[in-house]
Amino acid sequence: MSSRHKHHQTYTTKMASPDESTVSVSHVGKKKKAPSRYWQELQKEKDEAKDAGAGEGNKEPTTEEAEESNTPKQKKRKFKEKRDQNQDKKCISGKSDPFPGKARIPEDRLQKFKRKEKIKKPPHQHYKLRTMIARSEEASEMAQKQAARFDLLLPEEAGFLEGDEGEDTCLVSQEDIANAVDITSGAKHFHLKLSQFGPYRIDYSKTGRHLLIGGRKGHVACIDWQSKHLMCEINVMESVNDIKWLHSESMYAVAQKKWLYVYDSNGIELHCIRKFNDVLRMQFLPYHFLLATASSTSFLQYLDVSVGKEVVAINTKTGRLDVMCQNPQNAIIHLGHPNGTVTLWSPNQKEALVKMLCHQGAVRSLAVEKNGTYMVTSGMDKKLKVYDIRAFKPLKSYFLPAGASCLSLSQRGLLSAATGDIVQVYRDVWSTPVTKPYMAHRVRGTVWGLHFCPFEDVLGVGHQDGFTSMLVPGAGEPNFDALDANPFRSAKQRQEWEVKALLEKIQPELISLDPTELGHVDRATFEQKHEDRVKALGFDPLAKVKFIPKFKKKGRSSAGHVEKRKKQVAHEDQRDIIRKAMEDKRKTEEERKNKEQKKTLMLSQKSALDRFKK
Image 1 (cartoon, rainbow, N blue to C red):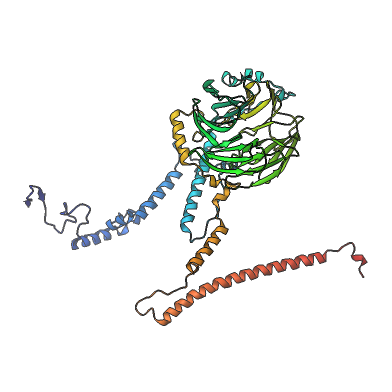
Image 2: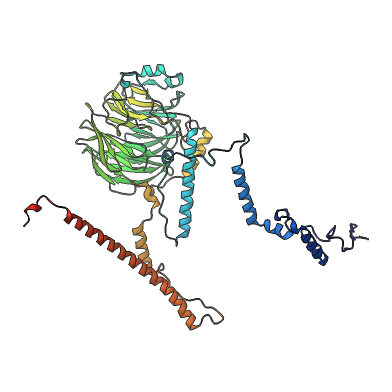
C-alpha cells in the first residue's frame, strides 16, 4: 500500500502481522523507541524459554540495559577500566614497563627549587581564602616539580681552576689562563688604559652583556664589552662619585659632584634630579624599580624610576655615607659607618631595622650573598668578617695585612677583595677556614671598583689606570633564566620584558626584613579591627548565632517539637564543652603524674652524702 505526501515525498508502510516482531520503517525518528505490542511480549517469553539452558554470558543486553550503560557514570567507569588495562598492557617489544608511572624526582633537587613553606590554612568559615591558598600551593608545587625535572636539560656546568700536584692556583697568571682557554673565552681578558681620568667605578647590567665605567674626573662610557662595541662616551665636566645601570641597558644614573643625573645609552641627558644632592653611592632594586642613594649629608633617599618621583628621604644621622650595598633577597639596604657599625634600612621605616657592631674601626666595604644568607665586611682594623644575617652573628674572621678596600661576591659564592693594587679571589669563605686565596692578580693602580659579571667567569676591576677584565673560572652562574635576564635578547624582547616587569613591579611598602611574613595574617591587627567593629555595631558579628528552629508544617512546629530540637542543639554544644574540659583535665593529670615520677626517681637515687645522715 503506497501513499504520497503533499511535499512529493513517498513513504511505504506495511500492516503489522503476528509473525513479524518489529516494524521495518518507523513513522518516528530513529532515536525514539518503537511502541511495544502484546505479541512482542509473547515472542520474548518464547525466546527466553529457548535460551534457558544458555549461559549468562551469551545473553545480549536489552535496550534498557544498553541505555543504562551509556550514562556518564558508566562511561567514566569504562574509561578508567580501559585506561588501567592499557597501562597493564605490554610494550611493542613484548615486555612490560619495569618502572610504571612518572619518574621519581630526587629530594635534594626538589629542595633546590623550593619557593616557600606551606601556609597554615585559615578556619573553614573563610572558605574562599582556603580555596585560594590551596590553588596557590598547588601551582607552586607543580612549578617546583617541573623546574626539578627540567634541571636535567640545563647543559652548562660551572667552570673551575685546578692546578697540578703541589701547585697553588693563586700563582697562575691571567695570561696563562687566557692562552689555555678557547679564543672566545680568552678574548674576555683585556685591559683598557685610561690613565687620564681615573680611578674608575664600574657596573655590569643585569644580563651581564653591557659594561658601564665612570672616571673620577668626569669620563663616562657604556660598552657592549663582549663585542667591544662602544655605545656612548661622554665627559660630564665635573667629578663622578658613582654610576649605576637602571632597569635596562637603555638608561643609567650618574652621581656627579652636585646632583644626580640620568642619561640614555646614547649619552643624552634625560633628567637632572636636584632633590638628590651630594650623592656618594647608589644601588638599584630591579624588582621595585627603586634607585637608592646615600649622600655625604647622611641622607638615604629612594627614587622610583618608573614614575620619576622620590619615594622617601631618611636622615640616618650617622655622618658621611660612602659604604653601601643591597641584599638581593629582600631588597634591604646595608650601610657602613665610620664608627664600625653596619645598619640595615627599609623605605618603610625612619629608623634602622638592625644595628650591628662589626669592626673596631671604620667600615670600608660591604657585600651580601645573592641568597641573602651571608654578609662580608672589611674595616680599618684590617679584618675581613663573615656574618650570618639570619642570626646576626659572626661566622669567620680573617686578618688581611693591609685590609680590603673593595669587596664583591659572585653568583657562585666567590669573594673578591682588593688591597691597594692587588686583587685576591677567595673560595668558600663561609663554610671552611681559608688559608690562601683561590686567585690573585696585580693591576696598574689603586683599585676603586670591583664587580663580578653575571653569567660569566669574569671579574671587572676599575682602577687608577683604567679598567681590567679578569678571568675567574667558576665565578658565574652557567645557566640563566631567559624570562628574567637574557644576555642574548633582541630589542623587541627587551621591550616586551620591560612592559612585563613594570606590570609586575613590587611596591616599596612590601620591603621587609623577612619576605615570608607577607604570606602570614597579622593577628594583632585583625583582633584590633574586630574590636573596633564590635564597638561600632554594638554586637559581635562573628559570634555564634543563637539557634532558632525553622518553622515546619503539619504540626511539626508545635511547642513540644520546638523545645525538643532546641535541647538537641544545646546538648551538642554542651558535649563540646565537656569534651574540652575532659581533655584539659587529662592533660593536667598527665603532667602531675610525670612530675611525681620525676620526684620519686630523684628520691630513689642515692647520693654520696647519704652515709652522713642520722
